[in-house]
Length: 115
Length: 115
Image (cartoon, rainbow over all chains, first blue to last red; front, side, top):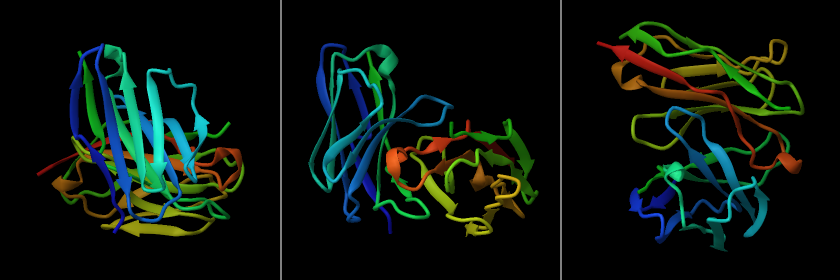
């Protein structure tokens, strides 16, 4: 069964706080992703890690800092966020790409509220 | 560029009605196609996928066929249940290259099923 686990499920933070979102997968996938989703909108890609190296940064503000400690873990460090950063943050993972593409599996998400 | 277009929502049906949600995609490259479902307050779940022309994806009574000639991937279910109420996203991804990990989503279709 596919499983991407995210913690915490809910986070409320002030604009001066530093917090982190965590993600873990045990499917042997070598690509991991952070997406941001606002209410009633499709998810937007933020970062892609491939074999623990950052391969795509979709011009995300530096107040979001990703980290991939190993092939199973992905963190998103948050600092000096703005209220408009409040959203659902989705972690995802996938196997190697190739002919026919890859399948991306999502976690349950972390609901972030910035006050 | 790559894009996915879904039918406008919301869609409201009675239980046991037939469901169709239309989805068309741009034909660049050799995309894999997906339907994701998002239940209220949850993350995205992969509902079904198809990786090449004429493939049919199916799961939980839902079906979609990869139609290259019409660049379509319409989602269908013969008899919907109240528990199918959710947001449905059609998505595409190219195989490898610089598009690695970049899912392109449609705008999402809200489905509400009444008893």
